[in-house]
Amino acid sequence: MQMRGDTGPAGRPLIIPVFIPHMGCPHQCIFCNQRAITGKAAQTPSPQQIQEEVNRFLRYGKNKPSTTQISFFGGSFLGLEKGTILSLLEAAMPFVRRKDVDSIRFSTRPDTISQESLSLLDRFPVSTVELGVQSMNDRVLDAAGRGHRAADTVVAAGMLKEHDYQVGLQMMVGLPGDDDDGAMETARRIAALRPNFVRIYPTLVLKGSLLAGRLNDGSYHPMALESCVTLVKRLYLYFKLHDIPVVRMGLQASDGLTRAGDFIAGPYHPAFGHLVHGEIVFDAISSALGRMEKRPDPLTISAHPGMVSRVQGLNKQNICRLKSAFDIKKIALLQDEYLAKDLLVVAEQQVVLP
Ligand code: SF4
Image (cartoon, rainbow, N blue to C red; front, side, top):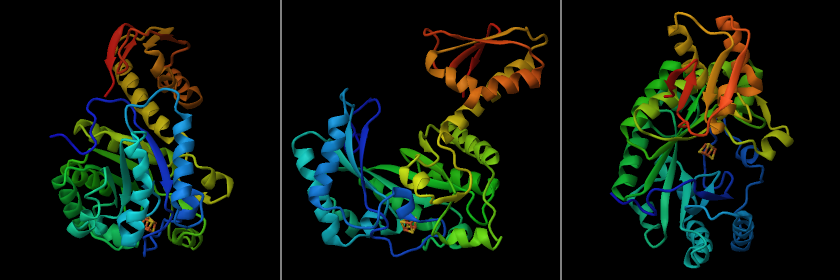
C-alpha cells in the first residue's frame, strides 16, 4: 500500500526538527524534563521562527536528500490547542508548496489520537506520526506517570494505519518496575502492531525530573551502560527479525543535555547505537571463532570500509576483547570495498551479520 508521503525506495531523509518542548502535555512523566532534552525553554515557536529554522537546515544540504520532512517534536503535538496545531502546520505549508519539503511529521502521546484529532490533519501533508509508547505494561506506565494505558497505543496505532500514516513507535528501557523480560514483552507487543519503524531510548535521570528525586532517595537505580547495551541489542535483533527498522537507539547528543548539566545518571553514551552495533559484530565474530577447531594467529578479518569502526568497536575494544577471549596475539583488519556491509570474512570464513 502506498503510504502518505512515501516516495518509494529512498535513502536517508532529511528531518528538520522544530521543537515544541513540553507543550501540549498536561503530564509529568517521571523521567521527563523536556527542557533538558531539547535544550529549549517551553514556548510555541512563531511562524517566523519556524521559517528561520527550516531555512537554516535547508541551506545545510549539499546533496539533495531523498525526502525532506519538517518534524514537530519534543512535546505531544496533538495534545496542543487546536489553534496552535493548525498554526504550526500552516507555518510549515509554504515549504511544502515550494517543494522544498515533502511532508510533515510529529510525535505525540498515544492518547491524543482520535478521529477528531486526526481530522485536523486532513488538509495537510502529514506523512509520519510517532507515538511515545514507552512500555506496553500498564504497571510500568503507571509507575512512570504516563497517564495512558497500553490499550491506548493499540487503538492509536490501528487508527493511524487505517489513515495510511507511517507509524513510528518509541519504547524505553530501564523504567522503574521494568526489567529485561518486560522490555522484550513490550517489543513483542510493539512488533505485533506492525509499525514502520521504532526508536529505543534508555531511561536517563535528568535534572528537574521526578526520577531525580527517586535517584536521590535511593528508590530508583538506573541501568548500567553495559547491561543496557546488551538489552537494546536483544531488542534491535528482535525487531530486525521481524523486519521492523530501528531508526535510533539512545538519545542524540544534544547541547542541552551535556552543556547545561541536565544529565545526572543512567546509561547515556553519545555513541549508544554504535556500541550496540559493535556488540552485534563482536558476537558474530566470537561465535565464528568459537566454531573453529584451530584459530589462526595472526587472525585476519576483512570488512567493508563502512563497517570497520563497528568491527573495531569503540576505542578498538572489540579487538582487545577478541584477543583476550581467544588468546590471539595479532588481529589484522582489512578493508574490502567489494564485501557487502553485512558480510565479514574471518580467517577465510564468511560471517553474515544479523
Ligand atoms: S508525555 Fe512526553 S512531554 Fe509529556 S511529560 Fe511525558 S515525556 Fe514529557
